Structures are given as C-alpha cells and as structure tokens.
Length: 194
Image (cartoon, rainbow, N blue to C red; front, side, top):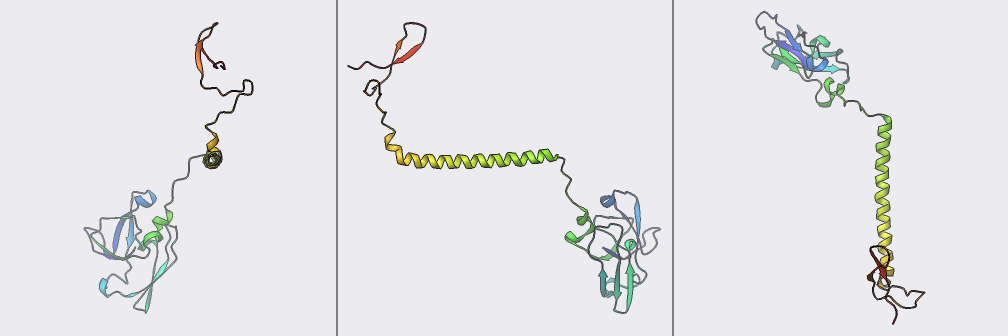
C-alpha cells in the first residue's frame, strides 16, 4: 500500500506514520514511513495520476515505482513510502493510500509457502511403494474374483456332484463318526457297501 498522507498525532510530525512489521519479518520495533511532500497538501479526492511500478516480487525491503501526478510531474517512491500487507499502523490516527498489489501478488503472499517436509526420502519412497502394492493387491483381487465368477458360470452345475471313489466304485452317502479302538477322539469312517 502506498502511503499518501497522515494527520499529526501528539508529537508526530505531519506526513510520518509508524508501522510494526512483526508479521512480516519478526521485528517488533516501529519503522517510519513517510508521505511524499508532493501529495500532502492535496486533498485525496483531487489526486489523479498513473502509478508505474515493478512487477510483484518477494523482496520485502525493496520497492521502486513512480507516480505521474496530473500527467506533468513524476514522483518516485521507495521502500520508505509503502506499507505492506501484514503491517500494523501504530501511533497514527489515519493514513490515505492506494492499494498497488492485492491478493496473491502481495509480498506477504509471495513469501508464504508451506513448511518443508520432515520425512526422509526413504520414508517417502516406502509410502509410494506401499500405495503401489495396495493398488496391485486390489487389482489382483478384482481379477481373481472376475475369473472365479466366469468359472462358476461355466462349471456351477457340476459342483453338487461328488465324483465316484475309484477304489470302491460307489458314492459315499454320508460319513459317520465312530469311536476309535485305539487312542482318543473321533475318526470318520465310510459306511460299508451293502
């Protein structure tokens, strides 16, 4: 934000504002911002001009621009004439300014980025491998269930028939359990053919 003018508060000289930039650079001391002398005696509604400034960048301590007031005089502005987003105005009743960068183009937003990952490369690689193995497992389960469904469709009518025993030549009707003569427990025994 470009500062254009302020009102005197207590012993503050006119055209001076104090800002605290603790949210930007962590410094809690007050920094001085100055209004340009060319803009101070003029009413804010009467100011007209074109602002020519540099493209948005991440440098918090640098700013170069010019303001062409009424098309006839160019006023240069620097870092001491701006208030960045995130600054707190202190000991100043009011200030008039123009928003130059907004949204994602502000220096605060250009300097904000996520915290670096605290995972090692091995952990990251293992996570990717685990996800790939889970995907392969789901694909295999899906393929096997599809093939089992196809096989059951072709051979489902044969499942109720138990093939004949080659040694006896008969179909077992049921299994009976009889006590063993030696040892403990139960043992299945085929019924004798009658």
